[in-house]
Length: 260
Length: 100
Image (cartoon, chains in turn blue, red):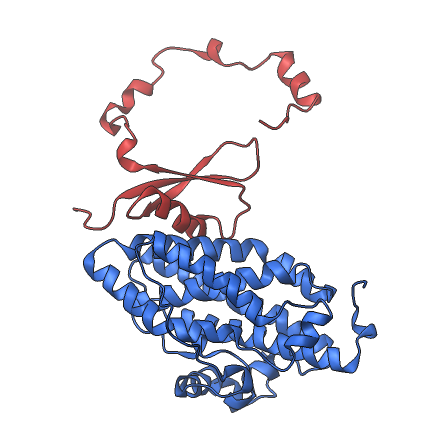
C-alpha cells in the first residue's frame, strides 16, 4: 500500500486519524502547560531554564498536531486549545495530574517522553505521510528530551536516600497513569490495518520493557503488579484537568474574537 | 563571595564543523554529564550549534590580571605581524575552508 494523502482517505480512516491526532495534540499541550508551571520555581536556575524550554517545545509539538487536525477540517489550534471543555479533551491522566514535587515532574517527564519516543519511531514509518513528516521533524527535540529525562532519572535515582525515595514514590504513583498513555481505543485496528500506527498494546509492551531496564539501571524498581488507569482517551479525566483548563483558558475566554 | 552551589563548568560552543569552540559562559551542575545536558538549553537553544564542550572550571589554570603587563609590547615588534605576505591572499582565494 502506498502512502496516503488527505484527499485519498476513507471516512472511517479519517475519523481514526483525527482521534489519534487529538490524543497526541492534547497530551503535548497539557503536559507542556504542566511543565511550564515550574518556570521561576525550578530547583536551580539551570534546571529551571532547561525544563521551561522543553515545556515550550511541547507546546510547539502540540501546535504541529493541531495544525494537522486543521488540515483535516477540524477547528483552528486556538479554538481547540482554548474553547473546548474537559470532556472534549482526549489527553491521558498522566499529563493532567498536578505537578507535585520535582521528583514527580521529572519521573512524569521521563515516562511520557520514553512513550513518545517509541510512538514517534513508529510514526516515522506511518503511511499517513503528514504525520510521518511531523514525527521526523520533531525527532531531534524529542531526542534531547529523552536524554534529559534519562539523565535526571539516573542521577536522582540513587543520589541520596531522600532523592531515591522521592523518585521511587513518584514512579509507584505515576506508573498506572503512564500505562494509560497506551489506552486502547476503538480505532486501534483501523490505524494498525492501514499502517498508520501500531496497536497501543504493542507500543506499550516495547515501552514497558525499555523503561524497566532504564529504571533498574538507575536503582529504581518499576512496579509490575499494577494495572493501568484508563479513561482519558474517552474524555474522562481527573479533577486536576478542570483546574488547569480554567487557568489556561481564562484570558482567551474573556474575548475569543480579539486579535492577538 | 563563596559559591555554595554545585561545581562550575565552563561551556564552549561550536557553530559549525571546523570552526573553533568559543567560550560562551559557565554553568552549575553536579557533574560533567549533567553540565553538558543543561548547557544545551542555556547556550545552544537559539544559536546554531553542532557541538558543545564543558570543562570543569577547576581544570583551568589562568594568569593573574596583576601580571597582565607580561603581555605588553615594550619595543616595536611589528616584524612579528604576518601582514604583507601574498600567501595570505592566495590562501583566501583558493578557499581554505576544508572541514577539520
